[in-house]
Image 1 (cartoon, rainbow, N blue to C red):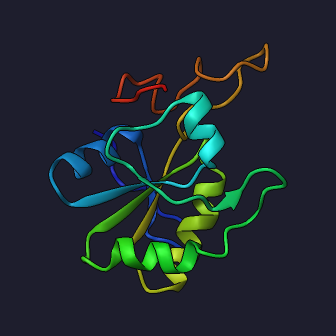
Image 2 (image 1 turned 45 degrees about the horizontal axis):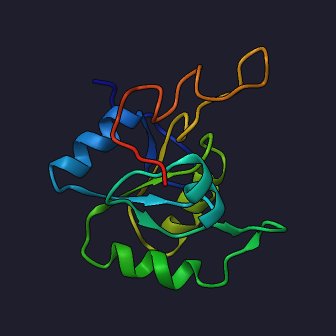
Image 3 (image 1 turned 135 degrees about the vertical axis):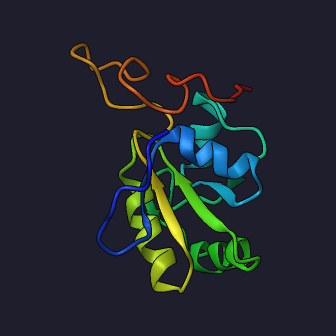
Amino acid sequence: MAQVQPADGYAGDVSPQLAWAWVQAGEAVLVDVRTDAERAWVGFVPGAEALAWKQWPGMAMNPDFDAGIQALGAGGKKLVLLCRSGVRSVAAAQRATELGLQAYNILEGFEGDPDANAHRGQRGGWRFHGLPWRQN
């Protein structure tokens, strides 16, 4: 299994598989930083904590993020952050680190990068790797 990749401003980047292994072992809390709309329409990881980094519509910063991430990290576990493609989760991990928490970005995100036809889900991501997820 892949190891932690070094990163600037947060604890590091991890594969979806390593993040899930940590969660299953009770070492980490999985935090989904996508919007409520994304989780509802695209899918979600059962048991993940929902805490949007930005809010839809308009993608404005979530004013409750700091308090929410501090509450989730209060138990001292690692925080593994998931977004659509692994971009917002980097920013969220950097902010969590600034707040004194041990935060990691999950590489590839929930949907992975777009393919040649601009479709996600075919080139990496949580779902692509067959990890647990559901749709409403």
